[in-house]
Amino acid sequence: MAEAEKQGEHAHIRCRTIIEVLGKPKEHVETALKEYIGHIKQDSELVILNDDYSEIKEQGKLWSKFVELDLVVKGTKKLISFCFEYMPSSIEVVKPEHLVMTNPELSNFLNDLQARLHSVDMVVKQMKAENDFLRLNMNAIISNAIVITLKISNLSLEQLSKVTGIHQKELQTFLD
Image 1: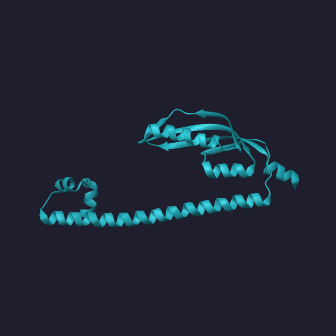
Image 2: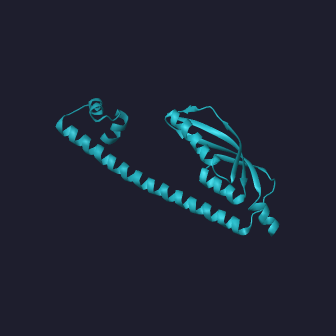
Image 3: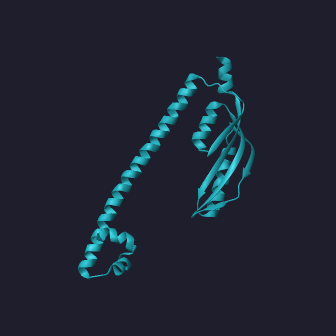
Protein backbone atom coordinates (compact mmCIF):
# COMPACT_ATOMS: atom_id res chain seq x y z
CA MET A 1 0.00 0.00 0.00
CA ALA A 2 2.79 2.44 0.85
CA GLU A 3 4.39 1.76 -2.55
CA ALA A 4 1.05 2.36 -4.32
CA GLU A 5 0.62 5.68 -2.52
CA LYS A 6 4.15 6.68 -3.43
CA GLN A 7 3.54 5.86 -7.09
CA GLY A 8 0.22 7.64 -7.38
CA GLU A 9 0.09 10.54 -4.98
CA HIS A 10 3.76 11.51 -5.01
CA ALA A 11 5.00 10.26 -8.36
CA HIS A 12 6.31 12.83 -10.78
CA ILE A 13 4.25 12.57 -13.94
CA ARG A 14 5.56 13.87 -17.22
CA CYS A 15 2.94 14.83 -19.77
CA ARG A 16 2.28 16.83 -22.88
CA THR A 17 -0.76 19.01 -22.99
CA ILE A 18 -2.38 21.52 -25.28
CA ILE A 19 -4.06 24.65 -23.99
CA GLU A 20 -6.03 26.79 -26.43
CA VAL A 21 -7.61 30.23 -26.29
CA LEU A 22 -10.37 31.26 -28.70
CA GLY A 23 -11.80 34.74 -28.83
CA LYS A 24 -11.38 38.27 -30.08
CA PRO A 25 -9.80 40.66 -30.65
CA LYS A 26 -6.60 39.07 -31.92
CA GLU A 27 -4.35 40.93 -29.45
CA HIS A 28 -6.49 39.82 -26.50
CA VAL A 29 -6.19 36.15 -27.49
CA GLU A 30 -2.39 36.36 -27.63
CA THR A 31 -2.15 38.24 -24.33
CA ALA A 32 -4.67 35.99 -22.56
CA LEU A 33 -2.81 32.80 -23.50
CA LYS A 34 0.55 34.17 -22.30
CA GLU A 35 -1.02 35.31 -19.01
CA TYR A 36 -2.71 31.93 -18.57
CA ILE A 37 0.60 30.10 -19.04
CA GLY A 38 2.28 32.60 -16.71
CA HIS A 39 -0.23 31.60 -14.04
CA ILE A 40 0.56 27.91 -14.59
CA LYS A 41 4.30 28.64 -14.27
CA GLN A 42 3.69 30.07 -10.78
CA ASP A 43 2.33 26.75 -9.49
CA SER A 44 5.05 25.04 -7.44
CA GLU A 45 3.66 21.56 -8.16
CA LEU A 46 3.93 22.05 -11.93
CA VAL A 47 7.17 22.40 -13.89
CA ILE A 48 6.99 23.45 -17.52
CA LEU A 49 9.94 21.95 -19.39
CA ASN A 50 9.00 23.40 -22.77
CA ASP A 51 6.29 25.63 -24.23
CA ASP A 52 5.71 25.69 -27.97
CA TYR A 53 3.27 28.39 -29.11
CA SER A 54 1.35 28.15 -32.38
CA GLU A 55 0.80 31.02 -34.75
CA ILE A 56 -2.50 32.76 -34.19
CA LYS A 57 -5.18 31.78 -36.71
CA GLU A 58 -8.44 33.35 -37.70
CA GLN A 59 -11.46 31.05 -37.30
CA GLY A 60 -14.50 32.77 -38.70
CA LYS A 61 -15.01 35.90 -36.61
CA LEU A 62 -12.74 34.66 -33.81
CA TRP A 63 -9.02 34.11 -33.32
CA SER A 64 -7.37 30.94 -32.03
CA LYS A 65 -3.95 30.28 -30.55
CA PHE A 66 -2.65 27.29 -28.62
CA VAL A 67 0.43 26.22 -26.76
CA GLU A 68 1.80 22.72 -26.36
CA LEU A 69 3.35 22.25 -22.96
CA ASP A 70 5.81 19.58 -21.89
CA LEU A 71 5.43 19.51 -18.13
CA VAL A 72 6.06 17.56 -14.96
CA VAL A 73 3.25 17.29 -12.42
CA LYS A 74 3.68 16.26 -8.80
CA GLY A 75 1.27 13.34 -8.28
CA THR A 76 -2.00 12.08 -9.68
CA LYS A 77 -4.05 14.39 -7.46
CA LYS A 78 -2.29 17.42 -8.91
CA LEU A 79 -2.64 16.04 -12.46
CA ILE A 80 -6.39 15.71 -12.00
CA SER A 81 -6.53 19.16 -10.40
CA PHE A 82 -4.54 20.59 -13.36
CA CYS A 83 -7.09 19.14 -15.79
CA PHE A 84 -10.04 20.63 -13.89
CA GLU A 85 -8.40 23.99 -13.24
CA TYR A 86 -6.80 24.68 -16.63
CA MET A 87 -9.12 22.67 -18.92
CA PRO A 88 -6.50 21.59 -21.47
CA SER A 89 -7.74 20.55 -24.93
CA SER A 90 -5.76 17.33 -24.63
CA ILE A 91 -3.30 15.65 -22.33
CA GLU A 92 -0.93 12.76 -22.90
CA VAL A 93 0.86 11.09 -20.00
CA VAL A 94 4.40 10.29 -21.15
CA LYS A 95 5.99 8.91 -17.95
CA PRO A 96 5.66 6.79 -15.92
CA GLU A 97 4.14 4.07 -18.06
CA HIS A 98 2.02 2.76 -15.17
CA LEU A 99 0.28 4.72 -12.44
CA VAL A 100 -1.43 3.38 -9.35
CA MET A 101 -4.39 5.15 -7.82
CA THR A 102 -5.80 4.32 -4.44
CA ASN A 103 -9.54 3.79 -4.02
CA PRO A 104 -9.96 7.15 -2.23
CA GLU A 105 -8.06 8.95 -5.03
CA LEU A 106 -10.26 7.36 -7.68
CA SER A 107 -13.42 8.04 -5.67
CA ASN A 108 -12.45 11.69 -5.15
CA PHE A 109 -11.69 12.07 -8.86
CA LEU A 110 -15.00 10.54 -9.90
CA ASN A 111 -16.95 12.66 -7.39
CA ASP A 112 -15.20 15.83 -8.59
CA LEU A 113 -15.93 14.87 -12.18
CA GLN A 114 -19.60 14.22 -11.40
CA ALA A 115 -19.93 17.52 -9.51
CA ARG A 116 -18.49 19.44 -12.46
CA LEU A 117 -20.68 17.58 -14.95
CA HIS A 118 -23.77 18.36 -12.85
CA SER A 119 -22.70 22.01 -12.65
CA VAL A 120 -22.28 22.23 -16.43
CA ASP A 121 -25.59 20.44 -16.96
CA MET A 122 -27.34 22.94 -14.67
CA VAL A 123 -25.85 25.89 -16.58
CA VAL A 124 -26.89 24.37 -19.93
CA LYS A 125 -30.46 23.80 -18.69
CA GLN A 126 -30.64 27.34 -17.31
CA MET A 127 -29.33 28.82 -20.57
CA LYS A 128 -31.80 26.73 -22.60
CA ALA A 129 -34.70 27.94 -20.43
CA GLU A 130 -33.58 31.56 -20.84
CA ASN A 131 -33.14 31.07 -24.59
CA ASP A 132 -36.62 29.55 -24.91
CA PHE A 133 -38.10 32.44 -22.90
CA LEU A 134 -36.31 35.04 -25.04
CA ARG A 135 -37.30 33.32 -28.29
CA LEU A 136 -40.96 33.18 -27.25
CA ASN A 137 -41.01 36.84 -26.26
CA MET A 138 -39.06 37.93 -29.34
CA ASN A 139 -41.59 36.19 -31.57
CA ALA A 140 -44.43 37.93 -29.74
CA ILE A 141 -42.73 41.33 -30.10
CA ILE A 142 -42.11 40.78 -33.82
CA SER A 143 -45.69 39.66 -34.38
CA ASN A 144 -46.98 42.74 -32.55
CA ALA A 145 -44.66 45.04 -34.53
CA ILE A 146 -45.90 43.54 -37.80
CA VAL A 147 -49.57 43.85 -36.82
CA ILE A 148 -49.15 47.47 -35.69
CA THR A 149 -47.14 48.40 -38.80
CA LEU A 150 -49.69 46.83 -41.14
CA LYS A 151 -52.60 48.59 -39.34
CA ILE A 152 -50.90 51.95 -39.90
CA SER A 153 -50.04 51.30 -43.54
CA ASN A 154 -50.61 48.59 -46.11
CA LEU A 155 -47.02 47.59 -46.99
CA SER A 156 -45.57 45.01 -49.35
CA LEU A 157 -43.27 42.28 -48.04
CA GLU A 158 -40.24 44.21 -49.27
CA GLN A 159 -41.37 47.46 -47.60
CA LEU A 160 -42.24 45.64 -44.37
CA SER A 161 -38.80 44.03 -44.41
CA LYS A 162 -37.14 47.45 -44.65
CA VAL A 163 -39.27 48.92 -41.87
CA THR A 164 -38.78 46.04 -39.43
CA GLY A 165 -35.19 45.16 -40.38
CA ILE A 166 -36.17 41.51 -40.75
CA HIS A 167 -35.17 39.62 -43.89
CA GLN A 168 -38.06 38.77 -46.20
CA LYS A 169 -37.65 34.99 -45.77
CA GLU A 170 -37.97 35.19 -41.99
CA LEU A 171 -40.71 37.77 -42.22
CA GLN A 172 -42.77 35.50 -44.47
CA THR A 173 -42.93 32.97 -41.60
CA PHE A 174 -44.72 35.53 -39.42
CA LEU A 175 -47.05 36.59 -42.22
CA ASP A 176 -48.06 33.02 -42.98
